[in-house]
Image 1 (spheres, helix red, strand yellow):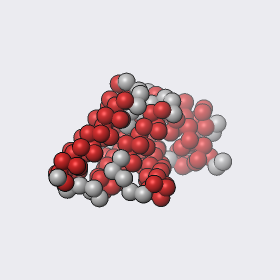
Image 2 (cartoon, helix red, strand yellow):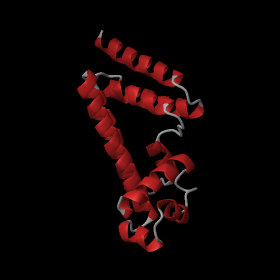
Image 3 (cartoon, helix red, strand yellow):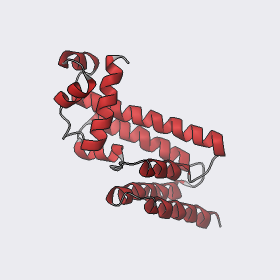
Image 4 (cartoon, one colour):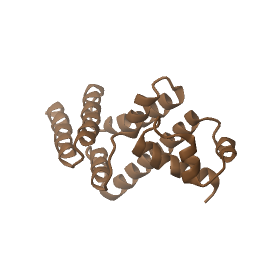
Amino acid sequence: MIAKDRILEAATELFYKRGVNATGIDLIISEAGIAKATLYNNFESKEVLVAKYLERLRLKFEENLQQAVSKQGRSLTIPFDLLETTVVQGEFFGCPFTNALTELPESTLVQEEVRKYRGVVLNYFSEFATKEIVQQLMLVYDGAFTSCKLDPNRKGVRVARQLAQQLVDLANS
């Protein structure tokens, strides 16, 4: 594995589990097994590294979304299903995009990655509902992340999935 990938791998795990601000560059360097110069040759700042971490997560989410659609067809509940899979796999620390934006609210790089991620989810939900309902679906989706962060089990996702379906059904009746 090349150094850039090792850095991103280490940063991904550390930023998600510990938080962006609680994860120092020295810890990332140690976990990646690289020199400080190597980190800065690949990422000009911690902010850039955080943005690349978020980009990596967004691209993985998009890939997982497409794989799920390919396997089971388009369904309103797929984003909730992906969240549930994440929750039941083990350590869950909430939405990495919300977490990063909370820690770096002034970062335009982080804001951009959050916007792109939310755009993917909004675009997906827009296949099933009007713009007004899509905004409500996003609130339910965001709420599911928060609920699972506070109480990491699948109950919150199940309730959110049901609420989302009820919103769409109600709007279409």
